[in-house]
Length: 501
Ligand code: SAH
Image (cartoon, rainbow, N blue to C red; front, top):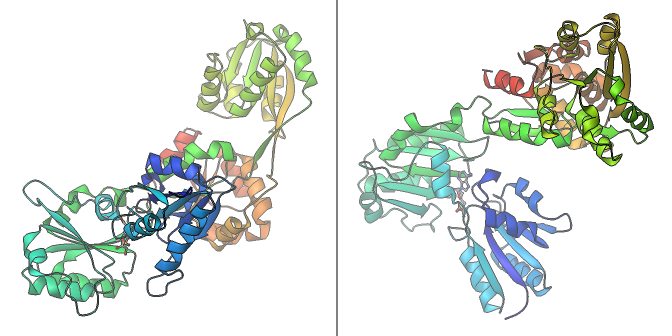
């Protein structure tokens, strides 16, 4: 056998979460990825940066790449001794011509490994709330191509009568004729039927009705490929089992402006609520490189009564410095520690510190109020924080007679690299919601998109803010604030988004 190996991998039906673990592992080691049109491009991010990505998609009707050319391309890349991933929509051996590609490789003396994928045939109906089989309703299903040769019947009697659930792939072009043949061969016009377009993706659309009506409805509503056609009594279960379309952020695009590192878990929650995420990190946390003053402070840290953290970033950097300066954490013994909110508190906990005080309101004003009962004038407070943060905290504490020492650990700067394509889309109003998690996310966002575009964005896109201070900043720049978290936390924001109609 020749040396190149080709992995024929199923990418699943669209939702990037439906790629298998094995598929992801193989992609992570790929030198070349040859992918099809229905493959979700997000999955290509699993491939290493060095990987060559080749689009070999076929538009229905006009072939960008003939099958012969694809076969040759795969062999050519394999012959270079590189790890080739042939990434195909759904399962590669279900109407994907994966079998043909595998045969060609074998004939040419190359090895291949198939990594099965989640086929659209079952996953797309599942996301639409339709199980293919159901006790008492359907005990068999068939997956059929709707793309038959002209004049060749697609649905003979044995298919029409003998099987409970019929799933047609590639059936949009011949929909009317498929319906006609089904009825002519014994299915009644009242049989429940559904079309599902872009299944498992945020744009998923479903048209459910009866066999008799569906082709006309599809034409009226302009239903088009990629779509799957499903026929059978199981379609009625959708009324009770359809969950995806009821998710609160369904089909909505949400812009996250948080720094890249903090955007992931937030993004996952938005996706779980049915939304689509666009990341435009408008802030980059730039650590101060010269922290000599902090090192000096470490030596006399027992002079402080309170240590107040106003961000998780500050906790991270403070404790990293403690370690890198070889300072034992026990120097903090006896100092009271305050965190502005739950995320900062959680970060402290990760460092082994249980916080003494978290205010009721997670903002600078909240800290001032909460500390008032806990301090005596003359006490000393250390405030490790971001450069450019609001002055109200230090001022408020000083007004209560405290000695406040501020130390800047980092700066929230505008990232050097900005994705212009995303900015363009936001200006055009392609997103439904934009999220601001601090006043600096607002001001940096405005710097990036340009002040003159704020009005246009605001007219098309809703604004959600983490709390009143951020909302004030957003209003100052001309945004209408549509949502505000009650608890001034990311979870509070998510609750506000989930409650949105
Ligand atoms: N190998 C693939 C099928 C390839 S044929 C699989 O196992 O899923 C392509 C057809 O699959 C499309 O014409 C459409 O009928 C169906 N299909 C694929 N992805 C789909 C999706 N996300 N929503 C609806 N239909 C889809």
